[in-house]
Length: 395
Image 1 (cartoon, one colour):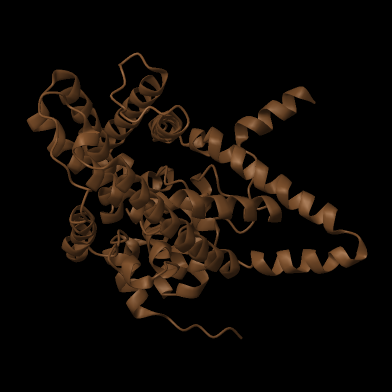
Image 2 (cartoon, rainbow, N blue to C red):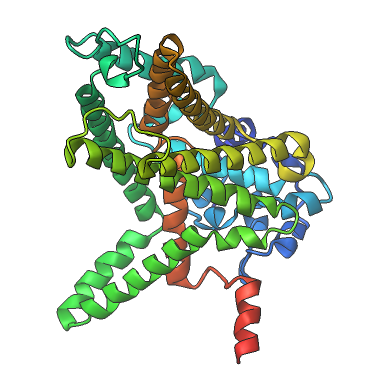
């Protein structure tokens, strides 16, 4: 016999974190039938809805299937009771950010809007403290907009590297805790032990294959294409995803300019390749986010209602893009009195986006990536119907 121990607090937390419709589910399994991404054996999200209603916290948090759901909301639209399984699974994923976060008290800050003042105050206090260091804040050139004359570039780089190192460390700890929770760490230990018999290369090679396949799934966003009711999500998320990549490349290019080519002031012309890539990245992120916001606000019954975590991430990212665009425009216009405050605001929103990455929706990418590897390894992830039809035609 299996002993069931409901966690009532967990149920209440899910209701607050976006799963308010959970109790409406009467387990008809329509959601599992209509979901194009759910496997035939032990499909989701019906079992997850049952576990959530029963408060089976341990089962849900160790269930990688919650990440195979892309919240296309085909299930929520077809649900005869309005239980919105897509939003309930999104609430479970938000809880995963909290449960596996390191340190956990920071993850707690993202479980409720009541902690928002603290979330906003932490980076504000840290940035203020850095600006008090002698030589960091300078007297800016008001005749020509040169951001290096306002805040020391080296101080920004050191602060960025420090925050980046912190994020990488806590992210690796959090992701390993999740990796261990879904049982993958035991499989890896077993593979290494089998290596004594000369089978290590074969086993690790298989793992790398699964990792590469999962990475290709993420790069192509192929799972989003299977959504029937909200197929806009494929293009909108693709824009945000590749916009981010272009912004990362542009940032790397700026670093090469400064330390490789000795260009210490990045007042680049609009036609510079680094500037062009950065502006294209900003444009893709802005359009993708605007599309997502428009769909969520105008068609919430179809696109779904954003949770607090969704709103925080979207708003912060939106402010990063908007302040970046306005900052550049004011620089080209020579409006120093506007450009410098915008630069400071831009740094604040970027700092917040990066520093909170392991605790917010930014971590979505990594957790889903781990679940993809698990699904590839266990055969849990079925081939999308489009790929299956293509293979059938070829054969």
